[in-house]
Structures are given as C-alpha cells and as structure tokens.
Image (cartoon, rainbow, N blue to C red; front, side):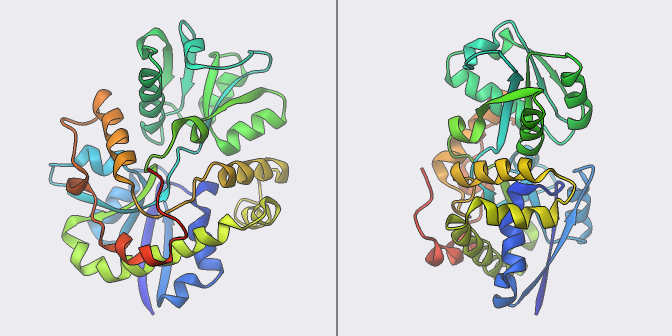
Amino acid sequence: MDQLTVTSTGWNPNYLPQNVAEDTGLFAEQGLQVIRRPQDPWEGVLTDLASGEADVALGGLWVPAMYHGTARDLVAVGQLNGRYAQAIVTRAGSGEFDWSWLRGKTMVVPGAGGTAGYTFIAGLMREAGVDPAATRFVRDLSTEMLTELFEGGLGDALLANLVTGADLQHRGVGVMSLLLADVGGPIPNSVYYVRRDRLDELSDRLGRFLTAVQGAMNQLVNTQADDLTKLALTLFPDVDPAVLRTVTGHLLSTRTWESVRIDRAAYDRWIAFQYDVPLLRAPIPYDGLVDTRAMDVADPIMESPASS
C-alpha cells in the first residue's frame, strides 16, 4: 500500500468526495493510504509541502498562481471543487439581489483564509458591468469575527461559506440571496497542487488518487441529499443537521463535484479575475501552471466531460 499525504486549508463539506473515496474503499482499491493534514492557519500547507511532510496540498488555485515564477514553484494537478461554493447573505427583507444592488453598500468579506472571496466577487461584478470600487468592502478578518460583526449590524451583505450562510438563514438572521456556484459558473476553486520538482516522483500515485476521487464524484451524482447529510454529520457532528442538509443539497445541485479535470476555459477566466485584482504579475497560460498527467489517468472513469 503506497502512502499519499494531503495537507489542506482546513476541512469543510465541499471536500466530501475525498472522504467518500476513503470511506468506500476507493483509495484502497487503488493501492493507496491517504492521510489528511488540515491546517489552521491555512499557510501551514506551504510549510508542509516545503518540508516534505505532505505530498499534495488542497486549496485555492490562487496560491500556486500567485507564487508562479518564484522559488516556491507549485503546479496544480487536478480539482476537487469546480464551482465557488459560497453564498452572499443579505439581511432579511433586503429584497431581490443583483450586483448593482451593492453600489454604495458595504460588503463584508472574510479573508483570513485567503483572498479568493474578494477576488471572485470583484470579477463577477466587473463581468456584470458593476465597478467594485462603488462598494465598500470590509475584509481580511476571520469568518468567525466578521460573521459576529455582521450579526451585530456591520455591513449590508456577507460572503459566507455554505455552513455559515445556512446557519444564519436557519436562525432568521439573514437570507442566502445568491449562491455563487449558481451564478459564477465553472471555476477551478479547490485544487490539488504539488511542488513541481516532485511531479515525476508523485505522478503514478497522483493518477491513482484522482481516479479514486473521480469515482467518488461519480457516486455522489446519484446520492440523495439525506444520505450525504448522514455522512457529513459523521465529519461535522457539531453542525445542526438541518444546516448540513441545506449545504449538501446545494453542493449536489450546483455541480460542485463534477470532474477532477481543470477545464481550460474556466481556468483562463479565474486567472483573469486574479490578474485584475491584481494578485498576479501577468496572466499564466494553462500549461504553465497545470500538469494534466494525473487527470489524464482519471479520464476513463469520468461519466461526462468537464464543463466548459
């Protein structure tokens, strides 16, 4: 049995296909023992990769993109989430939401786990013809702190992960007015990435790993939300079951878990958003940041082509 250690930027319900691959024996069928190392704060994934404590990191594509061209040479090898699985929460009674509604208002965007939230929202606003500069953004603090402040009256809207958003909605504090996975389209949101100098060494294990993850995704397509909620409860026992039921239902309906393949068009769009912020010094071609070998191994078991 070969071992593969995956360090990750925390652990949340949108990472469930990896749990399914483990719990249903798909990793074992591929001759793999997969070890999870969730990190808090998230920057621990970089230390894990640098030291060799972990082989693979799971997190935002913006991290290897931002480091591209530096001594910390990282390359994406597949994706776990092909949608941005978060929601915009407004206060009850705010009315129908669209991007123009944010003009002159205050948007609360947690950022302690990274900058993807603001980057994606700003990109979607520009696509809709709305200048992000017309909105006041409160950023860079933790989800817990900014959610508490939003409940206390700060801001007109909050970017929330699905668990936080569903919890606020179930408690009557706010309304999930917009699911970004619905309106945002395909993007390589949560990806697996490795040190480029270890690609050859890891290639065989990565191919088997993504094959198992793709198999789990295929299983989830036919999973009822209640069954997925039961699995999620074993991993997140402190979360209200009604909240998890809402979360898993959204994850299934928005095609967050469709394919391990990083789609080129989705990649190009996400990179453009990052360049506009600007996180990047220049746009990075797909082949400069993505190695397809492990995805190519997983291809034969995909039920349908990746969205484009």
